[in-house]
Length: 201
Length: 84
Image (cartoon, rainbow over the protein chains, first blue to last red):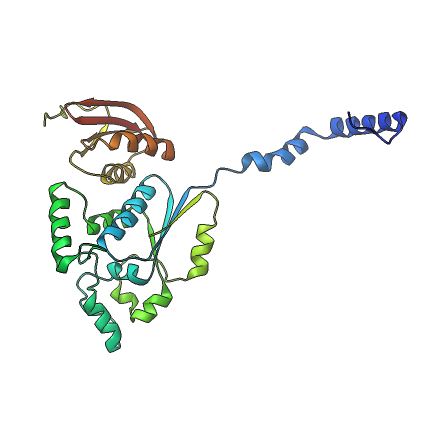
C-alpha cells in the first residue's frame, strides 16, 4: 500500500472529484479518446530487398522472395544496385555505357536477365549451362519468367541512380516497368516502415 | 503420375492447374488468378509440389483468403480457396 501524504479528507474529496469527472465524460468523447488506438489498422506487410548482385544464384532468391511476397499481399520493393542493375538491362543490349571503361565492363559481364553467370562454379559458362539444364528438367521457373510474374504482381524495382550513372546506363537501356531511379534515403525510408522485412542479397 | 479428375471441379470454382510448377509459381499463379475473381468466389488449385502444402497455408494466413478444403490424391494436391 503506497503511503499517502494527503490527509484522508483531501484524498476522499479528490476521489469524488475524479469519479464525477469520469461519469460526466460523454460516452462519445470517451470512445473518441480510445478509438484512435483501436482504429489504427495493422499496417500492410512490406518486403524490401536490396539487390546488389547480378548472378543467377543471387537473382533467383530476389525474384522468388519478391514474387512470393507480392503474391501474398505484401507491398514489395526491390532496390537494384551495382552488379544487381545488369540483369535489369534489356536482354538484347550487348554493350552498354558511353566510355570505353563502361563498355568494357558490359563486355566482361553481359547484361540481361537471360545472360546470368553463377557466383561460384561458373567454369567459363559450364556451370550456368548445367544449372539451366537442371532447372528446365525439374521445371524450375527461369529468371525471365519470375521477373515477368513479379512485375505483373506489382513488385516495384527501383534502380539506383548513382550506379546507373557510373555504368553509363540510360533509362532506355533498362527493361520497361521499372520505378523512378532513386537513392539510399528512399531505401532507408522503405526499410524503416512498420511491418517490414528487409534483405540484402 | 495418376491424374486427378479435373472434369468435375467444385461447383462454381475456377480451376487453376499448377501441376508440375515449382516454388514460388503455384502461389504466384494463384495470386494472378485471384485478381480476376470477385469476393467470395472459389478457386480450385491443383499442384504437385509437396512444398505447396505449407506455402498455401502460410499464403492463406498472410492474405486472409480461406482454404476451404485441402486434399491429396495420387501425388496431386487439391486446394479449394475462397477469395476474401
